[in-house]
Length: 79
Image (cartoon, rainbow, N blue to C red; front, side):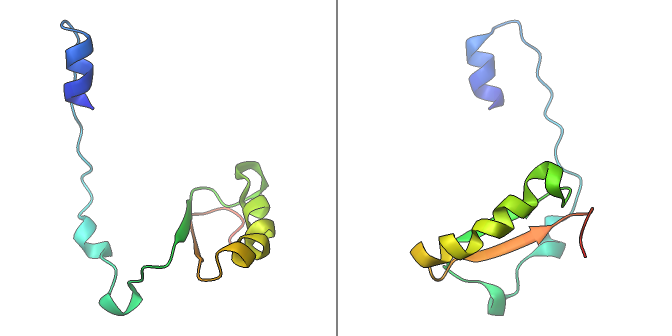
C-alpha cells in the first residue's frame, strides 16, 4: 500500500509501523488446520459490534456451507 500511495502523491511521507508481535507464537497447530471456510470475528464481543447477529445467522450459513467454521476472539460479553 505504501508503494501505491507514493505513486499517487509525490510529496507524501509514509512510515510503515510493523506489528511488533511475534506471530509465530500463534501459528495454528497442524491438527487444527483445515480447508473449511472459516468466519473469523475479532473484536469486542457484544451487541454493539454485531456479534449476536452473526451468531444468529450461523444456522442459515451452515445450511448453505455445511463445513463452515466460526471463530470468535476478543473481550466483552465472552460468557
